[in-house]
Length: 85
Length: 469
Image 1 (spheres, helix red, strand yellow):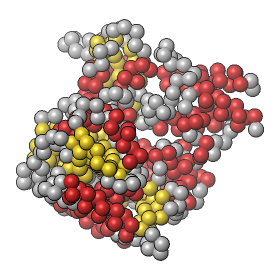
Image 2 (cartoon, one colour):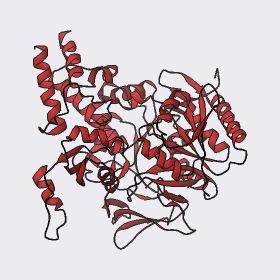
Image 3 (cartoon, one colour):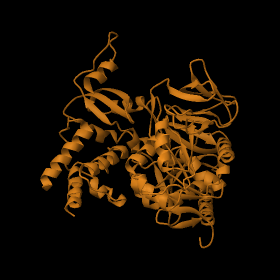
Image 4 (tube, chains in turn orange, green):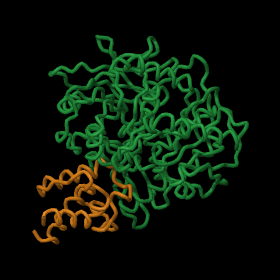
């Protein structure tokens, strides 16, 4: 899968999860998710699980961190790397 | 350290003996007495990441004859300053690594900073003291129905009454390895911190990262062969769903204590699949009493529905009004509350109406059936919807606010708002963080054109939810 296609898919999934399709104008693929403290761990970890299942990848405990999941783009980069290995 | 028995176990495997913790607590006690020779029975704040130094300072505060007041770094500045003012706080012990962020929280307060040692500093406030009831031990601030946080004061007597009950109930389990999951401002932490201390056991202190990452937390529990876990149904549900417990042998867990929210048998069945040798207890109690009823879960395959909250920890301390409201009277009770109006001490023989509705079953056990007001629980934290409403009403960007809680798999907080200008949901959520702790941030802020009204010209909540959700 192309990286851009992956990023688009992840963006659709996360935006739908957070805003049920009604995406705020100020939210974009670089908006801070975890360290903004606007999302609680139930939401974040639920999304991580869903993405793991969707893309059939296995995230190690230490990989589930702010560096890898703090925005849509960071999430897409990380999953792309995992899929490329 | 050395060969001495460890008390705290750190995430990296580091061990800290009780003697080492005690020695550090003594230095905190002496520092408090040096700076405040006359300070007694007053709250002293605690601010920082929950680690051996912060809990050591907590013991030092108690040793000095004062009460501890945990201040959570996740709270917004306004809330922290409100709590400091309303509790008449004279000092706060702050871990040095958290000092800069604490100072940022105090733009409107006068204070000085006293460096105590390489681990901690003390921030001193210039304000009048408040007279507290005798033997105050700790103050916990929760959400308040008037739109401001509410402080609950417990005495050493009520704390010891809880710990004595816990000792008589759980000593037979002979557990020696505990984990501390709850933050210090959540009353579950009273058990986590003091029960291992009085039973000569050890406590694993996970980092903030592990506490927000269920996979790391399950790994830690497995690696350290933790025997006792005390947390909320929401958190256990999250552990099962996202922590990958199936990857680990968790048969060393002897006891799982569950509190803070309504518990369903379905969750207990799922827990039993992974924690095969554990006993399960459902514990109930508002912050005003800590745990006041309990139920040892005898799990049968066919058990479904709500797990009972059981029977009183102390005989005759709990009664049920005709309305179904649970009332507590006894030695577990708080001694005072603090609101925006000041301190209010309770009188001898006071009966505390919990606001929780219960059903007394034929077998005599109590079962939680709901609330008589708008208080909700999210991951065990109690949240007054009115506090969220008032916080949002104070935002200039909004012209109208209504808040509802929707019980889905987890309880979700949904705000419906009308706005002036072009603010969107993400911007409004960001603004909320200046007014509310992270755990009170609404899951959704839905912008609408106008509120539907009923025949009495009040907001029609049914239509609101039906039209916009």
